[in-house]
Length: 469
Image (tube, rainbow, N blue to C red; front, side):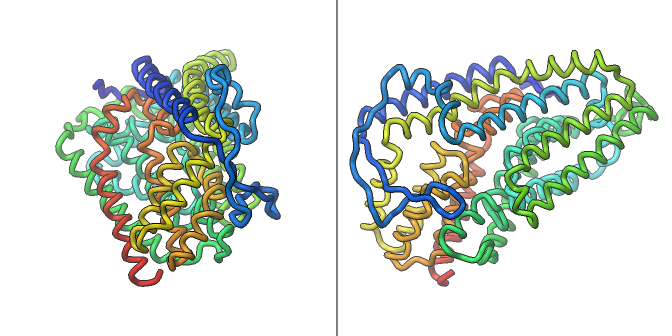
């Protein structure tokens, strides 16, 4: 693997071909599934906020299933006209903006200058820096529910990891894995725990003690995993950089541009942080992050001396480089669309719920965890899964004598950790593509960590059952 620190966003040809091949195989397997399973449907109702929620009391019935071959083949395009396509379009627009800005920053040398300045500041304490970055990303996920919004920061952290003498996988662990783990612990995650507790009739963000414990344990596991790996592969940091003998030396214009960039990013992050206290802006955090990076990047390159024509050319080039990710997003999203159009998504869910009623209490909570993880393969949105699953798994938990709060914890665990493992998650595929990392290399490197996470989370669920959490 070439460990040169890439500072612009571009999907590599190898990663793109691998991702497309994996997604096509999954799309084909999904189509085969629609030929095997009968169609089924749960009754649904609309809640006070206008969300479609399963009405468990009116039950499940078998209906006509299947999807025409042509419709499956065109599903990546047809899904754009379906309900919920707004989020897909938002992610695409978000990535194009970010790609354009990173290209502008890179073409003027600002990204490389920033990397060298950070290495100069933290080179003698790089493992402290690793711990700080991991904690920052985990907190972003745990308290703000950030995940897609962190994509533009992943290549920055990966470049920093390479500059510090580690590799791309270390950088992905410090950023992508960290934010995914924080999102999964869900201390105050409004998109998973918040929505699920509201649907279950619990006080929002109540029972945080167990989630805080999960956060601490997972953070310690992640730090042990990353530090152990980094110690094995680390290389000495370039002495020229450490002594300040860098390409731009101390360029006043560059320094001023970086101050502007950091200030606007800081203001944007403050706005994102405020979403914890202002629910009205929670649905717009991705827009805030996109505007934040757009404004920060434009101001920075203008201050550094870039003219309008150069900005337009580099921005267009960056947006063009990110276009392959659009196909990846559409193909990943088409899997859920196919299951819904074939009426087999509810069939899968009904079968899982029926099995859970036959299990002993300790096995039920672990099976609920499994149900959510399986559904997360097909539906990456945490809030969408909450509306689909909570009205079903909460009554099952209650019938089996399992505390509702513990059921919500199992939902948070099942929804989150696998986001950075499943090849159907667009954020994972894009992050791997932007850093020229194949999915095979990623899985080989990360599976032991996720096995450890599975052991810890299962133990926490069984402990919660024992103490009546």
